[in-house]
Image (cartoon, rainbow, N blue to C red; front, side, top):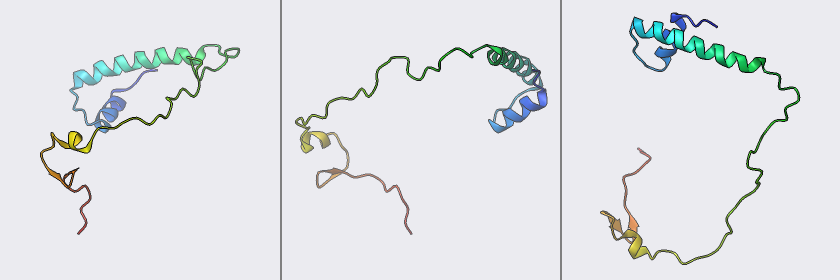
Length: 97
């Protein structure tokens, strides 16, 4: 599949990539080769191949939910630069006016 320089220019514009005319030509050739290669995959006979959803064979691997001692609040906030009432003070995220 030959990818035209116009299509390369269009994709570059969408990605906000400034390209020279030499780069457009270069990428047109390279992307065309990539599309030709991937087109070969669609021609492969996968009729008798079962889909693979999970290559490890493991399912629902979860850590046990165990209670453990946590870090004291004083230790957790000791390196903070702006602490008030035991909490970190940050700039507001939402601007309500």
